[in-house]
Image (cartoon, rainbow, N blue to C red; front, side, top):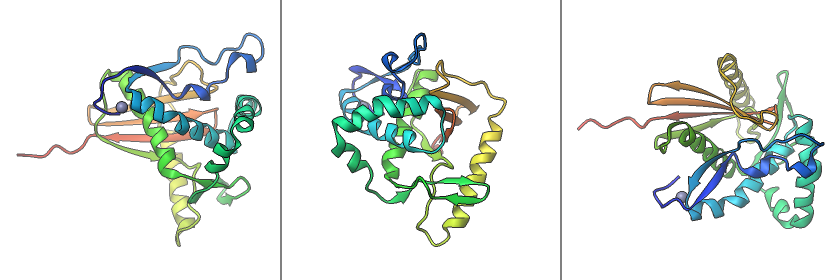
Length: 224
Ligand SMILES: [Zn+2]
């Protein structure tokens, strides 16, 4: 993320997304070979609240498997009971979090989302995965797509949401034949598409339902 000296290791994605053994049926382990990357103190310590926020968003979404439900009912519920003010603060922001089904916008699970904060959490994951693949930092552009988030407020939001949904579906098809990576796919799986050195697309799937695609593009080199 930065040029500072690496002093610790950071999990990619954050460790809190992966259920602990004590909350799982006997013999199940969802923390097999978790990915870690070097991190500076500042980025690692500042990140823990953002990690909680990411977990909150992923678990609150409508989509997801039984492992998501279990995580919600165990670790997450304990965390909310311990620091309710933190989770209350998560519920106040600018845009809505909705689902999209058969052409209709579904508002039943809507609440406010801090988009820049969410994007920043996903950016940490994408850049961490990039580092894990290539052993070097990514310093081009970052863009995130997800049909899990919908804008309710702009005047053309219905059309905008349809476009986002269609783009996300097209992207998902594109990754169909790519190799699924990640040792705990019930919690986190990702697929990688690369175009030379200049472009990468990463498809992420959290809890077998919450899908996000990230596009990384190299900055255009200036001609001198
Ligand atoms: Zn840093």
